Length: 287
Image (cartoon, rainbow, N blue to C red):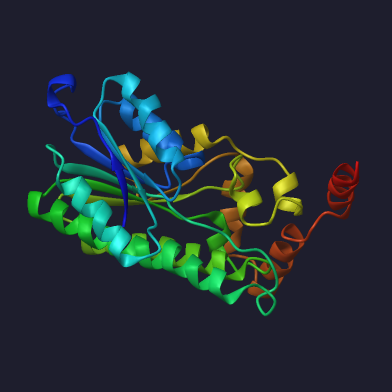
């Protein structure tokens, strides 16, 4: 299921936060870690999760803020992992008042050539685990008539995404899902926000095998900027926010105006490998 590290001696811990507990997935690096840092600085206790042991080091770093931090090393692409994370969160002394559902992976390549198992795992993590954890968290939040849930989508989900078709489709699902359940939960005290970042300076491109693509070589926003804008939108009760530079908002706004074949052509060019970058990397590896 996963490993959990916590400070087990309550005498060494501060009292539970009046702001409650925030659950953050994909929190070992990038946008997820930036969210965890912001939430800790804003006075929330934390349960942070990731599929790598680095998450425990992140927890150590966050504890200097004086907040309670529990780290969970778990694979959320499996349903048992999602349930384990929820059980850990429910075992904490304070209620879960914020959920940041950020865990996701990408797969690069033409659909018929890309590894199908990798693409199915992407769906399990990006889509299935999001629905599963959102269901568990919102049920508790609705019972208490209090809670905020942020789902991390992407501007890649605003249109077809040749070169990373399954990823783009998964993010389209997340955005549509967030908007739908936000509407359903009106009047319950639970607010849902969809965050749509553009290209962000994280390890995502390398992990997805996209480090040589044009989009990966182009301008990027910092994870801290994206997370701060997402946090502010969540606290303000907004339905969605396109984070980062103005170019992201222009792209997102134009997505609904451009015919899908044209949008697909633009996306395909962005996910093509940059020949110069590939050649440079090959030269370095030979050297």
